[in-house]
Image (cartoon, rainbow, N blue to C red):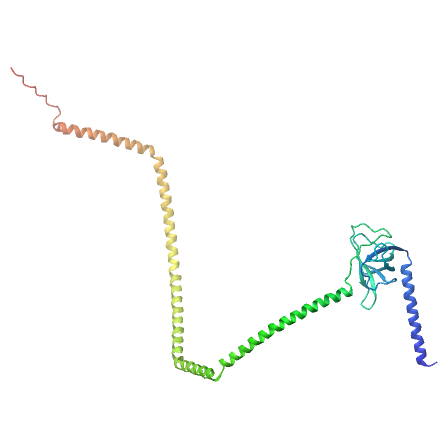
Length: 309
């Protein structure tokens, strides 16, 4: 036997051992007891007996039969067996799936909800239809038709845009023609001449503005210094004025206290002045009527009126 034959026999033996090991592990995994269930789909998608049953992405069993339903032949009845203890519940949903891209179809069951009631063995699992290849092809054809319409519409709009672009280029060619180029060149020459003529004046104006700004800065600095010099005396005068006002306020308060303390004396004085004024009025009236009372102690007797005989 040649070396190549020996190598080939060795490789085949390794593959045989690997296949036996895989089959043994699968049988050992599924030999712990299974529970039957069923579900119904409108489209089986190439699902065959022996396909894997996935619960939340975990392989928990296999499909045992795929056939039209007895009560409703338009639905495909799928019989399956899963490991005993698999938590299928009323919220679990069965649908077509794939173990991997290279493998065949599989039956995928969602985990559902922990609060949902567990499904008893032999019961039907709720299902969700998957899109068939024909439906996908029909949708692709619809999309293609829509794309053709959009392409035609875009082509018309592009033609309009290209026409506008051609008009724009023609206008640009007209604007940038020899005649306009000469006009633009004349305008630029005029601007250059103006800049050359007015440049010195602009420089002088700039120098004057700079000198004026410097003078303004010096003036502002002088004003700031003057304000700083005057600020302290003004503050001192205000402090003295505030102190004087406080003293005057205290003196007024003392005078008010003194007036309140001598209030009754002032009333007596006013009363005495009133009495003296009354007495002076009486004296004045008396002097008007009897002025001789100032030089005579006694008053002369009143003359008797002569009586007629």
